[in-house]
Length: 431
Image (cartoon, rainbow, N blue to C red; front, side, top):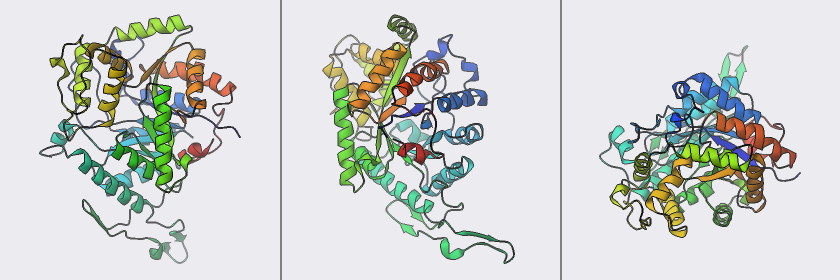
């Protein structure tokens, strides 16, 4: 069987494009309705995507005045979507910085049972000072400390998930025995950050072990992903850098004692699709015209750990800020954006425009054939095991990708035409 491409969709409100709510292609007043989310999940399932992914934010964006940056809780939405979908994986973000392991383990185990084995947890360490303020913290923990806590957090969650043997439930009506206590195990974890007894209050996952996704691209983030992740979401702008990152992840995964193919690397891409390349370029210009530089700069300020980019001349070259990041800031994303700006000699304004349509991910503009050709080239070059698709506008951006690009990938033998398994873990193992 030939190698198959893995696809996940990043579903965010009415799209990741800055101020895209102003476009007539969107219906922002419906963005918090169940019908909106159900339409998106069903569209992705129609395209045989591995997973439907909802990110999270634990603070209100400073751009809320001009951009629809509302962020609902992913878990209730995914639980509701489990009822109206049958096969697609349901991945949600939950922070290891402002949660506790027992709660996260129980929430995702519950979602996994509700969905018959389709849950996935996107592991993040929160790097936004405003989030700390919402959770009663005096300040944001240092980058290294967040990952040390995150490592322990993940280990505790996985131990809790494994605390029930597969045959722990006896359900013997005549004897009146529901569960075999000998097959329910405390974990009695005593670590630097957590003391957790266990066992969990819900049986083992229908899919054996709930898959984990992770997006950290700093050395500490990559090490965590190599040790525990099944999916790694990446931000890469060139096929060369993407191949280097993917090979680096595979080598780290092997060094962690796992098979090189155990982690699927999915670079992000924002497709802007038209019937022709020219029409796609016109759409990109139309959506780009809605972008407010000041709104995007606020987003970038948050990405760069609170550094105020508006103090720089917008038409001067983007400054090298890699050594100026606060010690508690995220590292991977600002480093990548800085390197892209330096390599391509972008001004502050140009980087803001670049980020505006795809929250920093690669924007792919073209006809369905052009988009399919590009994805095939990256995939066959080993730069990606698939892609996380971040539509600039929703639902149209996703519908167009599913209806126009997906059939082309399927006809080329690059993407499944129907699901061959039932669980998210099945989909990840398929191809």
